Amino acid sequence: MGVSRDGLDTRAESSFLAERAAQFLKSGPADPVSLIGHVCNLPGAPRIVAEHMAEAIFAGRPEFLRDDAGRWVLTTASTVESKRFVDPDLLTQLSYVVVDLETTGTQHYGGDRIIEVAAVVVRNGKIAEVFESLVNPERPISPFVSRLTQITWQMVKGAPRFAELEPKLLDVLTGHVFVAHNSNFDWRFLSSEVRRASGRELVGRRICTVRLARQVLPQLSRRSLDYLASYYGVKITNRHRAGGDAIATAHCLTRLLADAADRGCQTWDDLHRLVTYRRKRAPKRRRSALPGPAENDRTA
Image 1 (cartoon, one colour):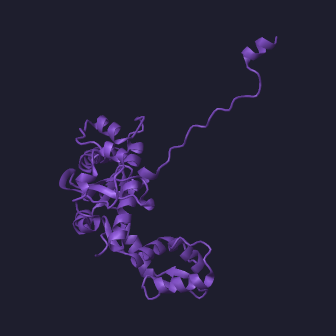
Image 2: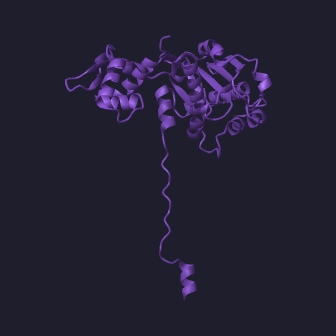
């Protein structure tokens, strides 16, 4: 599967590691120990190990080469390609896929699994496609999760396992900007399931509607989906179910992007700068160590 310039895609693990390496090397050449430490999350690996791993992963790939000092660098062609990849794109010309998951718990790395998935495609400011399915997690669902989602083991035991859903789900996801409310949660869970099912890695652009709402709607005291939907007058049907939450998030996304456009946010780069901008907090006033007027009165 090729990499989409505009949106989500998957790639084999070796390509994923190459992408991480390319991002790392944009700042300059790196020795094998530093490169493997970053790319493979192996800080301080023995040099001989790092040398062999780097050769196995990057040797023969046209975007990488080693300089006279033995450091890995990006080739000129790779630099040109990376510049092309970040060319500005109008937000109105991009399509988005809003994802929501219900899971057995909060720890994707600790054995929790997806029990329901929904993906809502948004084009030209309107919902164009909805994919939704229960998922057999191959493990029990806790009473707390069942109370919250109204999803029981009886409902999912006959549902398809994630590996069976993956081809259709990836067809829906591919080519669109990935969007979710608290996107790190959904991205990490979905990535874990895709990796487990096919050994592939999710790659692509992402938007977190929580982070976007912080910048576009700073006046809101909270940015939960309930608060955001209430602000925009969006009705949530089937709260804490993947389909209902994803559709509500999709409607909120279109409103958030419209409000961002009113602030001059027209391109993907504009949006990235907006979401990553951090407002300076007013410095806290430090209380003087000197006694105040009332204290002076009491000591008189």
